[in-house]
Length: 278
Image (cartoon, rainbow, N blue to C red; front, side):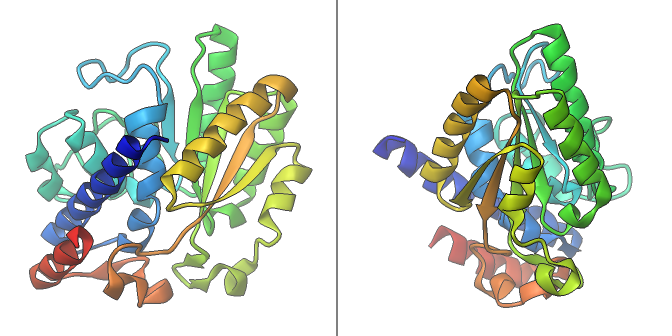
């Protein structure tokens, strides 16, 4: 990644974090922690790596697609899609309100640019496997990306999807785990430990990469390597993103597991915005 790219992503991630906080503060509470932890990954995908995206044609055939299996990270996607011109910026402050187009969890029937409805944990990655298989059959050349939560990875459906993806040779499927190691009930290890997470995915015959989930260079390099390795060995890929829940907002980071979903005032939003923009 060039220095120009690096500077762009630093500023873009600040913008996206501010929009996330604005949307959640407008309704007074939300899934702040897990939205902030995946900003770098989704920003790199949506602004540089994904091909065929067009705000004027959100359903364009053959486009790369992105499934937010941890559907409660919807506000991160909503911020990115608004910034990319998929809908008016004013929608951000309609988050999770009556008749909104921006529900708490992603819904492809309401929000332009959302490629798959998710919310029930494990559902999204299973759908991503179906999208990747369909793309292979159509030979449209698309790459299917999927963001999975670490708490979500305790669900059996995740591993059923992992099995079939490898069995079908879905080299066009690149998944990412937002491994912030915290979930609603405590630490992931306390609830139902995943370690060694990478070894588990390797055992399912996936290519596995372990990166700093807040390093845009590392994320981009991992995606490039996943595409190269997938083309050579016919396997799907998992990129484990080591992240910090609530990244970029000190009072969110300090809450630990309690930052999964919490109330925020307009005054706290202003504090967060100043801190993010630094």
